[in-house]
Length: 369
Image (tube, rainbow, N blue to C red):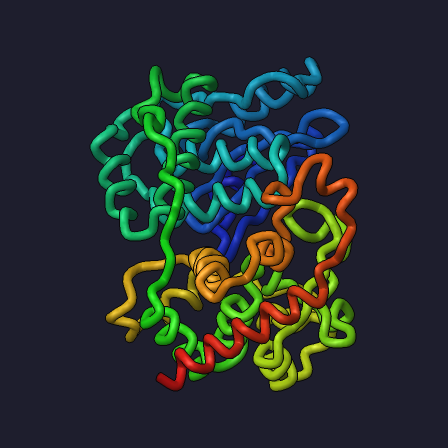
């Protein structure tokens, strides 16, 4: 690798491409769609550290620094601060995400990358990013509270990381002073009718998913990952370890829910696979939800989890005993918990079936009203 060779290396048209130095093992330059950055791999786990961006850092300086790190086997050292005086927000974000890859779960890294790339694209040096800039972005996400909260956590985590690694003197993102308010949203009967009818009109996969969320009261990820092999004799069995509480969960399917499932296309074991891979479950919730809600002008903003809360509220309205509702919802910390739960092994299968018959009748009457 020479200065001329580095200069002639093309930027990547899609993703990132790394070119390795023949003189210094584990040292190279990574070309993205916008920039070129020197990197070095350290330790047995080949942890990647960024040495700086070309042309701010020369090949000679980057190679010298790489040799120093390799000779010290600096696996536990902090990520290297670029040699140049100025570090752009884009470069700091790249370094932060690179460091996360060696310390965090892939899902966490993916979430950070999505949130930071989607919402925070400051065209300035990291030192010049202001609190006002960050809070303007966060404030603009107020219509989506969950996305707002996650974006706030992502940028705060990144800025704290920048402080630890010497890129900034202090974080401009203040701590969250208030906890997210506990949601208590329950759809009115008219709202529930509109959402259900909208779901009946919406094609596979999201329409049937919303119908099953309303009809079963299960969590969205549980319905999104539902498998045909878990359904037998009109009963669903979530295997141990799958549901949120890690316990096996059995619940019956009502007649309406059975009809929804019977009308689904044959997609293999997964009822709702990803569009591009039938071996992976449905995950594009936000995209489908946004389009699903278009036209529901008379329905106040709601989340899919609010449908689960509405399910429980309707069951209370039609007289379903609370312990039966909790069985349907797979709650283990409700009315039957602790010592009582240890000794009470009754499945309540018949009681759950009767409750769902009443619930189906309620929904059919509501839809036809």
